[in-house]
Length: 189
Length: 445
Image (cartoon, rainbow over all chains, first blue to last red; front, side, top):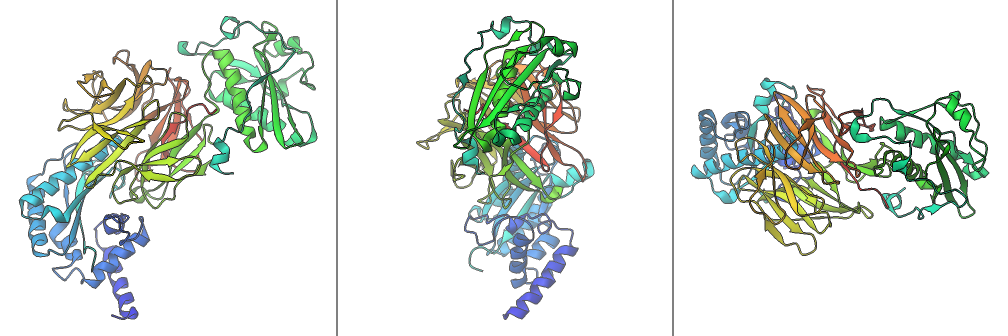
């Protein structure tokens, strides 16, 4: 692929990200989150730089129309589940989404998986970090029970550090109490 | 100016000035503020511009007296009588004090000072404190010397001495605060570590904003900072050397997250939380050997540990009862006893450096509070209330608490506030931008 084609793909995928309701670009989560595996392969830090690297990965693997693409996983399969206040138990709706995730992940085995646990702002910083860890772990355990290899998965808690929604009422809080399954194409893609 | 130079022991030892008669102890004099009793009427004082004793000192003279006046006024315990109201003019540091002129404007305390810069460029600051009501000096005169760059620290030293003599409490002005400087929208906040004087001056940034950083804590002598960073992609504890800004990761265990670190009083041990498989417990780490010891082993969340000042106990929060509550356990682990008993959720307990109180965050009926209780949980007292107050840190004298207050909504931003343990004198600490997670240093040497 020459440089010109890559640039076009990058623009196209950034466009998709900007239009979608998904958070991983705008919120700076996902593969932009500072080299989750510590090798610096995904760039450092948040914001446009990190998001740009994530977008390039997606571009090389096809857009949301490609059922094997991360964009498809994120938008069609559904990359996140939500939790009740101060809870980490999985609702029936969450289990449905996670079963679909497991199905996709066991089919598309080349992806590494990071499960991010998040909390709303109604809590102290330390407790919310611990609560996010509980939520991420709940999702991880469920995915393992559905056949996803634990070797592919890691968990991280962001506590209340990375809300998606910024208002201070339950409409926003309910979307911030979440666990997001972030996939990346490993080390060699 | 580098942080190293800021924190270097630039100040010479305190030198008592000759020729001043030894006064009665401050505790016995009439000029006395009992902080614990909740002062209603601030004590009026005057601090005329310090006397420049040579030309090179002129630029510091007025600034020194202004910093002293601001420090004392900001405590809420003192009220400055502006220089426009002064009758007496202090033209020489050794001239007799015109007590009648100061009484006439109802001043109760007078601070005079003089400043010079010697041939090697060192700044010398002298000051005296007078009890106007009883018509005599309060304590001996003191002299501080240091680099001209550290002129503010000398103003803080003068403030600490004056505060301490009048209140009988230790001072807290010559201190620094490490905190998190924030920028950007609420859903993409950038954070970096910063340190400043307790009054908001001399801000220096310690990290860039490429990684989330949270909850920095000073070592007991202020030479190191513990904090949590997402530099690796996962929350982990780092230890930074304040002088060199070099840092290293502590407690690396793959697949875990570490956070909420604090030093033991001897600076040899770090107590922290580690999340493994979704379960968060409390551990200690020997800073030198790297040896880790697990202190709690329950399926509940145990976090936010803080040592007692004698190093023998640890207060922490746990949701083992179903909601967040405060517990105290021996520093080596063992059976904890619950100390919080009121309605609501209790978090982030911090033991006072005096050992008498524990400050905490409380959530109750949709509001956040900063409060204090005795170490057995009795005499709970809420000092603040807002949409979101959290993370108390103690001034080294155990009389003032600083914390984070965040406003609500899409434009919500955090700021630093302080409050007396009496609940009085709630103040916003001036910072360049949104700021959170303050931690007070000890008194600087």
